[in-house]
Each structure stands twice: as structure tokens, then as C-alpha cells.
Image (cartoon, rainbow, N blue to C red; front, top):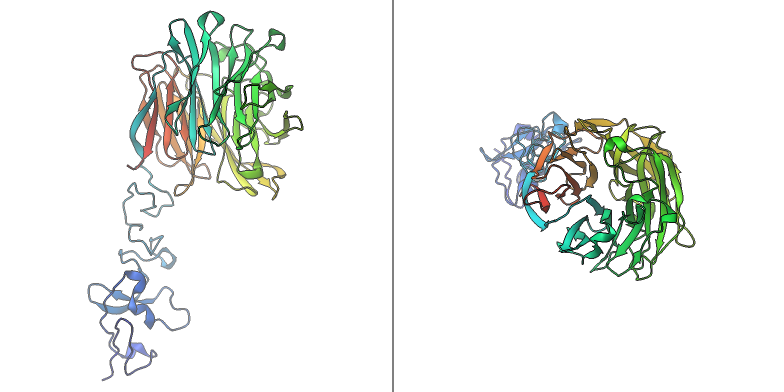
Amino acid sequence: MRRLLVLAPLVFVGCSLLGLSDYPLPTCEIEGGVLSDPCSALCTSPGCPGCSVYQCNTSSHRCELGPPDLDRDGDTAAYCGGTDCNDHDAKMSGAQAEVCDGIDNNCDGLIDEGTIAPRGSTQLAYPMYPGSPSISVDSFAGSTIASFTMSSSPGQRCIVAVNDSTFESTHCLPFPVDTGSPSQPYSRVLGADFPSIVASVYVRTDLCDGFAFRSTAGGAIDPKCSDGPGTLPSIIATDLSTTADAFATHYAASIAATCADVKPAPLFVRGIVSARTTTPTLTPTNLLSMTSASLRPAAFARGAGSVGIFVAAPDEVSGVGVWRIERGMTGGAVPTRVDVGTTLFGARSIDFAFGPGQTSGDVPFALVAELGCPPRQPVVLALGTMSFGPNGELLRTVMMRESVSFATAGDFALASPTVAWEGAPYNEWRVVWVDDGKVRLQRLTSAGKTIGAAITVSNGDSYAAVAAYVPGSRVVEVPVTMATDSRVVSVAVGCH
């Protein structure tokens, strides 16, 4: 009787591969993993391999014909009616339990749902006088700058900016107490070199709530009362070069004591020329909106490559305003409003982020906002897409999806939500907000669907806090009010 032997390498003796069902199947052994299964050489008919293939049965050590289970996890490939979404990885199957390892173990289309958690924290600073802190994320380095005021010595206060990526503080930018405390500081890295220059914009409460600037390069700009107030300032480098200038926004309004005190006010953008030097200068302001009512600075976002810089802020007419900011011939800030329709009405604070780093085509972005004032104000996410040409030209207006309300803030504090895109392997949005001193993190799919329940990142020891998610699975938290053992911390969020 003719027999077919399967060896390594395969040697077929005494028959063709036709009519195999007429002959006993040979024994088999697998060496080098399932991809080197010698039984696959028996598959020669049209349409094979398909949903009926020859595979080595590791129990009987014989080649058998059946539905594909290439990774031998006991689950048929999904394309043949099973629940195995990756038949080349035994850790992925509809029968598996999800574990925290960066892959979709249970084949439900989500990664690590219900398993990501805080994994420890690193102390960055002890703010002695937190005041009104702010946090900014520099997308080029995945770093976070936490900016706040503190007592540097008896009779002095200063702005301190803590860089989360290097765990180093910039030198203190001092102010005598009798000239007024620097209020609402907001800091950014200027340029991508190391050690980087950090710049802070803030409000001089002793000079008519005016807009002011300091940098670790020694540059300084102080306001004149004739310029009017310049509150809730924000700043971003114009580009990532070592000679970068900066763009800044601020409101022409006095400092609001509470959320209920916030009224619509003019929002301006301007350039800061030679921002990395000892002699920075301001360019004239350009109006963004006459009807922006906000508790936080306008939110800058930097797209990849030629996509450039955008800014978003609440708007009492359209809900939210979005502008593209480009550099003028003399270093000024030239805004162009982008039509995002009407969404997020009643927003009192907004954050803005771009998704995956495309430089052209359809580029996703996210806006997160808290709507209204405490108590229990909704935290809402709105997603959209901007379409760009190869040279960064905006080809068409923004397409927005319906906004998603996924949480509420606490009974007393502002939520101050922030949003960031977390890339591979997760490829999802992550939103951080504050719930009466507790910092929460919500994972959402690229389409805005929540992934599991919100994660409690930390139970702050302060009455309230401000926090931001940093791409790379970190959350930075700064207490807003004085409390025992108040700390600026970076909390790792992930698997290990």
C-alpha cells in the first residue's frame, strides 16, 4: 500500500498530491512554530488555503483537514466563523480574558480595557503658593510643563515651570510681594533643543491685570496700564527650531473670581518676536472673538508638519471657535477662523488636540469642554476632521461628529478637562478631568466611544487640582489650593 510521509523538509514518496482522501494521513511534527507547519504543503487545490486546510494536530501528530486554527489556541479564525481575530497569535482569541499587555486579547476591538491603572507617581515639586496653576503639553517631545507660583524666599514669590520629561525645574522668575503676585502663569518650551528655554506668560496684578512675559533666557516684557487688561494668557512656540518666536493669546477682561463672574470678552492673539532672547518684543494684537467667555486660557494645538498651529476657545455665538494661526511677515500672529459649525454651547473651558501625526489628508482632532459652572457640569467630547493638501493648505471646512457627554464634574470644583491622543498600540483619545479633588481619566476610541469605566488616577489631598494627560501614559497633577503635603506629581498610568 502506498503511503505519504511528511518530514522536514517535506519528502513525498510513492504518490501525487491528488486524491489524498484515498490514503491514510501521515504523522507530523512541528518545529519552529506554527508558521512552519509541514501539513500546509498538502494544500494544493484551488481556493486552498481557505476555511478547510491541512494542519498538524499536536495531540495525534497527524495532518488533519479542518477549519484554520494556525496558532493552536483552540479557536477558529474569525474569517471562517470563529472568534479568533489574529490566528497567528495564541494570546488573542474570543475565548481569552483581557490582560494588560498592549494587545486585544479577547478580540473585542479594544486593547487593555478594564486593566489599565495608576502604577506609581513621581514627585516633581512642592508648590508653596500654588495660586492659579496651568499645565501645557508640548507635543514634539511628549513633555508637560506645569506652571505655578510659589514662595521662593521671605518677601518674594516667583513663577516656577516644572518640565515633566526631564524632572527639572527652571530657575525661579522672582517678583517682590509688594509689587503683586504673578497670577495665571502659563509656560511652554520654546524650541526643541536641550536644555530648552522655557517662557511664561502671566498677569501682573499690580499693573492693571496686564499681560506680561518672562523667559529663562532673561527676556522680560511688562505691561502698561494704557494697554488694558490681558488675562488668562497662553503661549506656544511658532515652530520647533532653535530660533522660534512665539504666539500668545489673552483676554481683555479683569480676572474673574468665580465661574458665575465670567462674562463674554474680547479674545486676542499676538506674536512675541525674539522670544528666546533677552530682548523680546510684542507685535500688535489681532482679534479672535468678541464673545468668548472662559475660565481657562485659549487652547493651542500643534499639528504635524505643515498642518501648523491652531487655537480653540469658547464662543457665546457658536459654542466654540477654532482658528488657524500663521506667522506674518514681521512675526505677528495672523488668524484665520475655521468653520466648525455650532457645538459645545455653554463651554466655560476647552482643550484641543490633534490625533495621529498625518501631515496631509484627513487629520482627526478632538475638543473637550466642561459646559457651564459647578455643580455637576457635563464633560463633553467633540471629534472632527480637517482635510489638508500636501503643502498644508486647508482644503475644506471641518467635518464634526455629534458631541459625546461622558462624565460630570463634582459638586464644587471646576473640571478643567484636557484631551490627548495616545498612539500605538492603543490609538485612542484620553481625557483627564478633576472631580472635587479626584483626578479621573477616561479612555475613548477614535470614534469617541468610551472604553470601560473612568479610571481614578489619584485622590488629591487638595480641595481641587488641575491635571493633564501626557502622551506616553502619564498624568501630571498640580493642586490649586494650599493643603498639607501638596505636591506636583507625575502619575504613571499603564500596565506595569
